[in-house]
View 1 (cartoon, helix red, strand yellow):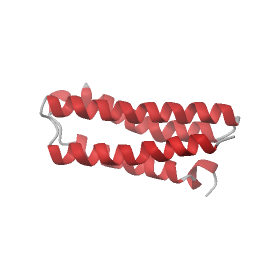
View 2 (tube, one colour; view 1 turned 45 degrees about the vertical axis):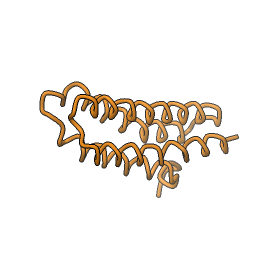
View 3 (cartoon, one colour; view 1 turned 135 degrees about the horizontal axis):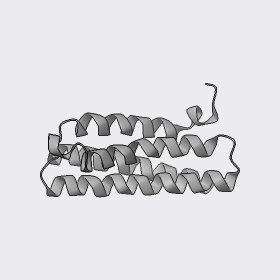
Length: 117
């Protein structure tokens, strides 16, 4: 692996989450694809992209800042799937899967952020 971020488990898990988000959101109603679906997908994508950007050539305080942004984006995904559930464009099963997977990613990012000196 050529870049520091590729070795980070939190980055690897964030890429997995993006896959889940894209797979599940592809089943959302077509009229939501350019609104809520897009927002959830962009937030999910940005989790891994912020870890990537923060890990390479940045100072540790700057890297910490990017992990905080990644955590906030995870919370945005959760907020988005709550909205999707409220307007009935996500099944309870898929909501629970994305909620769980996002939560299982946010916690390690928080722990990782604390380790960055």
